[in-house]
Length: 495
Figure 1 (cartoon, one colour):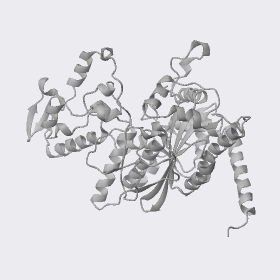
Figure 2 (tube, one colour; figure 1 turned 60 degrees about the horizontal axis):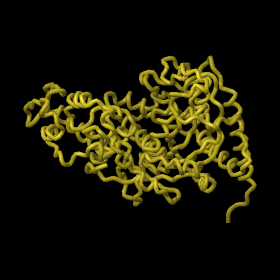
Figure 3 (spheres, rainbow, N blue to C red; figure 1 turned 30 degrees about the vertical axis):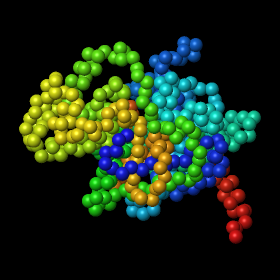
């Protein structure tokens, strides 16, 4: 990604694998207990069931994860989470060090479910294209059995049993900490987290919601839903909100207002694989352009008279991918949007964005011949040579703006669950500074794909009750906590 003039620093995270989870577990638990809030993100092998073999005998009509009725949607989501697997869990703990200041510890837990499970080809391709090391996941992923009831299946391998117990205790530590949990478009994250480490998902949507209220009594905050409510009219996908939040905090700091200060802290250095050290996406192989109708490409591009891809700016993806001739660079998009906003504020006269651009206060007609991006850039007084094109600025290649001068790590992290969790937490902290108590009015409302105005409400209903899974697992958590307390009380004091 080309620099848009802002200082940048890497996202720092600790990879947690089967080789180091025993050494890191106490540190992870400590940071969870000290955090002001915890942000998570996860990667999994499927969001839906598509093109399933007829041999499975699935009734695909019941697997509609975008169903209008919440009960039907939950049934489909539950089926997906029970038959697919969690492959990575990102955990970002924001430990307060002062007013609006945090030390942030990011952990990337690489996971390998031991139950036989389904893999959606589109999901696994997405992970591979975005730098996820499938080889490392197979060789070093933390092994666990999904759907413990209340205890997971036992393997003949003691190592597998220990790994599964420790990664499950990470969730238990989050539950015991009773801290706010922050997600972004996190309905599936919650379902997979529950199924993988808490227990079998309940049969009913009402029991699932009831259980979540007990697991996370401080509330669950979904930054996608919050952003759409508090910042209407702006894009709400994760990368866009993160870079926008960075800019907002930088402006606040420059204006002398209270602003967010974050120090990224790494627990343990680890040796990276070749894939990780080259995680930045390489240019994709040229695809057969005959698969796209040239007339369709021309038709869509004629409707865009901005130097950046408006569809990508709004939704975070583009139908033409790396063949799009307009920029997908989020920082450049924000630069342009800020310029457009400034021009709009100084130009009270309404303007037709589909046919005109302004130059020196006068309308300049943009016809078919003038619709080339370089001519649009000149009309906006932007140097075309400095514009990052989509082929050179993959949307998954993200860098964090440096908020302090204490980090000297030069490692750049791209699309990982840990980095996405960090971005989620950063957005939440930024929104909390700007909107204060308004966020509390929006907690326990989880964004629903395709039905953003109708979130899932996490609240205990008088007509529902906690599931059997909840009672069994919470009892187990209490027993483990009591055992650990007894062990600590019998240990001799340190010299």
